[in-house]
Length: 336
Image (cartoon, rainbow, N blue to C red; front, side, top):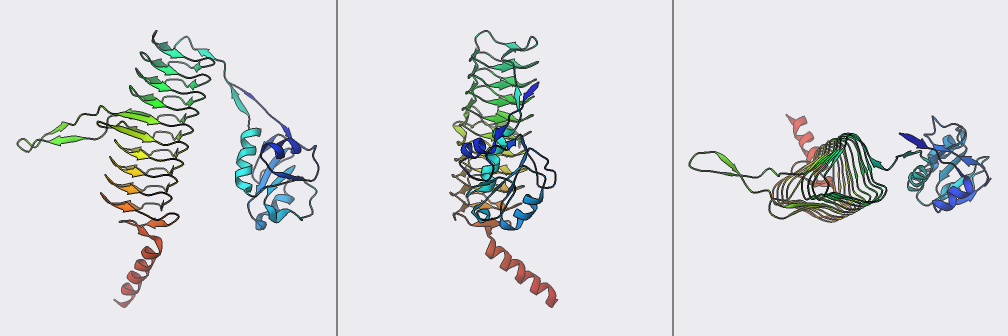
């Protein structure tokens, strides 16, 4: 796979990321780096005043910084932005080398004759695409992926090698799915026969819909609905090794870190942040903007409410309350 490098002048880049340029306009920028590893041609950033001196002393050719750098003398061009970290991320996207993929279907791929592939689709080695599947233009299907019957994949999607998508799943546009992810598998739903003690499978015939601009990490699993719908809202980002159970509804711009497990019929509203190894039981509701700290546990039917509030512990409660309880326990331990 070839990669096409890209370069921009400081002036061009500043305009593209909506930053204000202070200094030489013609400096050529070819990549990004950390302050410690930067070399000529690289762009670095300083999120706060405390990091600015190191950035200016680095070998980088230009620095992104906040308004705090506005009057700082510098031999390097400064790209001033109200959100330096965000500006750096956008610059990285513009400067980073992009894979150059040749559209077409590899000779080892198996594509059903009723499948519909848009213009510019790339299908790599050993891919299997099932009956009546649809793939939008300029999407890439990596080696070894299995796209089952009736799956709909939007435009400009990227599926890394060995992704499996079960029948009937719908992906929006610009969705990224990393290697080993499984989308649309059956939920963990069983009914116990009280006479025999045996478990019998409850129907898992619902749907999974993933909206635009979602990214799903490696080896994550998202179940289809039992009878209804599992949905991942627009712009949400799911880390590696996350499990989302059946009938879960995740809102827009939700961030979920690795090893989190979300049980069936939970509702995660817009702009929620969930740290690593969080456990969310069934029928939980996490309301808009709440933040769950690492290893928090939320029991069944619980409602977490508080925009911008961090919840921690098991059962999860506001971090101030949690820390007070820890301090009280510490004092009791000292008395013994």
